[in-house]
Length: 213
Image (cartoon, rainbow, N blue to C red; front, side, top):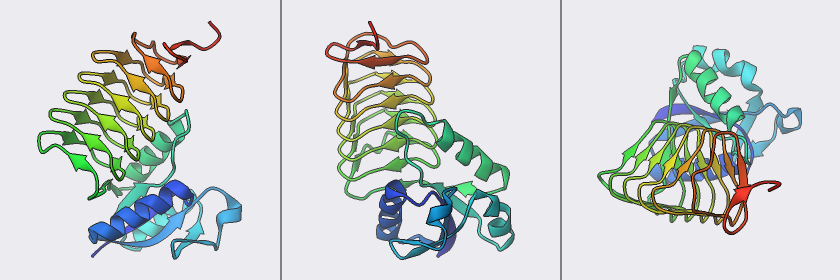
């Protein structure tokens, strides 16, 4: 089995660990987390070895694979920074597709992407790098999802939706076909998006409107 290190030691990391164990390809040798209170604890039986500064030391030991185990709650920039930092040290970033999800054979999935149980990705969808497609989320045909995006639990994207890099689609949100969600935008939980969302904008409500309007 290939050895891998996880970046992050919270609930999201725990889910990834379980998916990787189901797949049976990687031995996870440890986790790294910036929170000093996590040091010397264990997540699903895997030890937290220290913080992110240990990445070059772990690589020097011969570990060549890593995954981002930090979830994104409205701001995916920390996940993007971890991803690029690990790549800079030479790690190959691994993703995980839960075998209980449904992924079309014509879908394209980028490196480092995590697809959770009961998620559905339909024909012709294109998913970038370091993306989270969370539990029960639906990404319909011909959608385009940029790097470092988080599609949260139960969200539903109709056909040909475009989500630009860094955006966050909240729990249970619904996005009409053909809509574009801008770079680093945030779609609030339960929002119904029927119009394009500009970059760096938060929208909430039914129908979704910019926060404060």
